[in-house]
Length: 280
Ligand SMILES: NC(=O)c1ccc[n+]([C@@H]2O[C@H](COP(=O)([O-])OP(=O)(O)OC[C@H]3O[C@@H](n4cnc5c(N)ncnc54)[C@H](O)[C@@H]3O)[C@@H](O)[C@H]2O)c1
Image (cartoon, rainbow, N blue to C red; front, side):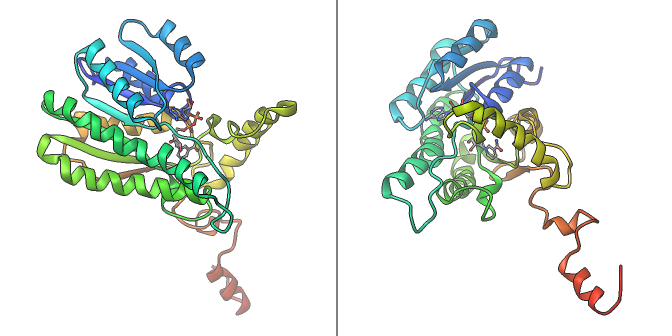
């Protein structure tokens, strides 16, 4: 019960990584407020969540909704200790030579500005409690091309740097700020942007599950719980000396090319050696 007496707000908490994290905070004693645009799932969670759980419809692209969500934590549970800025979606798949200004702005508002405003409005509430911990969801797409569309990837790179700069500015208030960068996690995010014609979403989810074990050295798909464990660590007193860092939770997806971890796949060095009749 690491979080007994603590109040945590989780955005995008009605599905996937956010939901897994909200449930983990609850299981470890926290009082939890979930904000999400998915009222059906959020209200279903509220019916089962008990007295330490609250749901509020909140669209994180709207500053007023963020303020109201954080206020809910204060009104319902007396304050705010932990904020997990996590809501997100894939957004436009347009490349840099196609993307429109509106598509670009929408991605930044959902993925980056939401975190900045979440931090902005959490600060007074956390100062009133003598400090706090903020975790933002970035992505492996923040550190390499090809993992996600450009507007998403650049926004997530912004989330990592936002976390670092905010950590520098807020340490004097006893507030720590870190980010997590999930890799290939089996959630609804991959299917949620496509129309569900002929069960297309279920098919995509099945493919994601099948491909994930081949994408990285840890040979299984990531689960929401994997990311939740990292978030809980960063939010806990065990991480009291950790701020401004990013924690990759990616099964090793970004360690290097497949040849670096799969003995069946030759790398460039192996190819050069083979040309000279040498094998390793
Ligand atoms: N699944 C992955 O492989 C992966 C990898 C890296 C990063 N991420 C990031 O993790 C976070 C969570 O995604 P997930 O994989 O759990 O996806 P998910 O689709 O299961 O959950 C995302 C949640 O965010 C909510 N949401 C979307 N737009 C919102 C808005 N404007 N306001 C409030 N809530 C909103 C959705 O309703 C949903 O409940 C996102 O920021 C995503 O970019 C996911």
